[in-house]
Length: 94
Image (tube, rainbow, N blue to C red; front, side, top):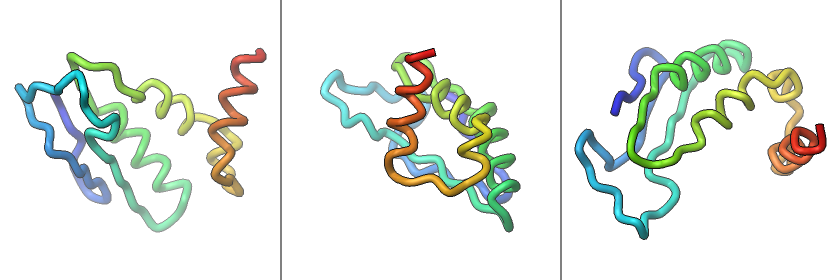
């Protein structure tokens, strides 16, 4: 397991290298948070942090998050709580 680090990056998790995740685990085993002076800069930091993250042994949503942070609509802002749902529906229809 490799977790990102550096300026503007915070990882909240109880998981560590060698940790055994129960088959009954809560789907939120970690949280990646970034901050920067602007949305565009924060997205750049998040992309780098996601690229640096490596987790083995369980399925994660890292590929989904990488695609989402590359989405021009998401980068432009103005999103709401339904953005992901709509975005996924559009992708499956393509």
